[in-house]
Image (cartoon, rainbow, N blue to C red; front, side):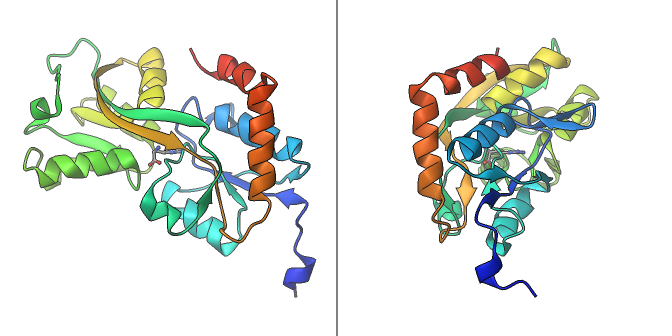
Length: 232
Ligand code: ARG
């Protein structure tokens, strides 16, 4: 058996959920993106080994880190009170609001949430974008049956292109990435002012080393280099 005293504290096994460009997506079968490179750089700078990436369902990330299947969540995850009851987050490394994506040049060009009345709205299950979509249902603007939940945002963007959903609510930089690659465009932004952090088990003492490393990368320009590499 594997007792906890044998637990490898040198290696940090990172987990993510791809389909969320430019933070994490697959290219030629390989996992790439800003989060992937940032997490590896932070782990390395903190003096730990990077374990094998686990690309799993977004809603499995918190259970998996709590179970010890992974040690670190790097998935564009918004820091929020419900999640903070279960896991600890690093200092914020990104800020984002939610964007509403529609078909590019289509007839439907909403300018505010009120304009989403009666349409089909999509989001990835378990995300803050889904939370915004659920608020539309609660406000009576969107029918429960017209809320489409996707396993990842790439599938949502595909369905939007194909006309199977009218609007997709997704983190703004990801919306920008889809708009660059597909026949979709940002209609308007819901100012949610979210902050992304990487997640760890609350008892994992390595978190403070990761925060120190993150601060160093910001100070020495490495963080800005990575941003320049993966954005715009
Ligand atoms: N920021 C949003 C949230 O935390 C969406 C994150 C989705 N991330 C992903 N890798 N699919 O709910």
